[in-house]
Image (cartoon, rainbow, N blue to C red):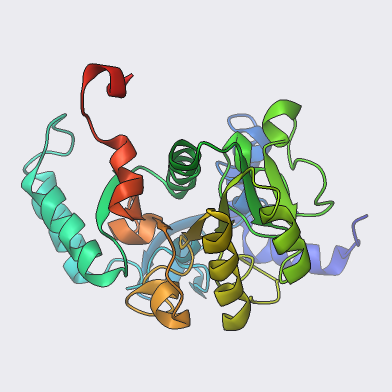
Length: 302
């Protein structure tokens, strides 16, 4: 059910006429005229042409304070001189070599120095890929099938993560995902110790994946005591604890939520913040878990 606000809509349209024009064109080129679900706004989204520091400038010439900051990825703000200079320098050298590069080692070393327990690092392209890989690693390591999460926590767009992040929590947020896949994810009430113990006590849960500060938006944060309980229960039941730090990584503290709350996870997922806001992400954590990505003999590699 939507609330009609004709006066507000008129004022909004008058403030952003060029955005309205571009949205009309976008509807013929993009589903719902947007490239990401988070862009959807009623009656139309604002189109931005540039940004610097804490501000965005719309195509209508209006300067707006940006509280969004690239979905939380731009810790240093838009167009930080050190970041743009590094990007410009590397662009002259090439962008996609299809080969190993010395900067990969420096990048991984910096993560290892800052993120607690980052014994090994694997780079991927997005936060969604990071959580998907972390879940797969947990299943490989434990030999178990199911993954537990908390209702209202968002862990990306892959099939195993699209249930339980918005109400009603018992169903998927999209069609097109087989029920067999959905059944491998358990959505628990956030902060419910009894539900957590019951789910992990089943013995078939490979991992508990958590947004350590609570759901990404509009949710009651998890407290330190509950996170510590989650750590104790996962250790007791042989379940891996995954911190999805796409939102909290390097923001709550240099070492992220692990440092801030004093709770050590087995695996940590980092999003675009680890790449200065560019497409890039990482899974970091225990060497014996990430070792499942390593090459050994031909039989193992299969």
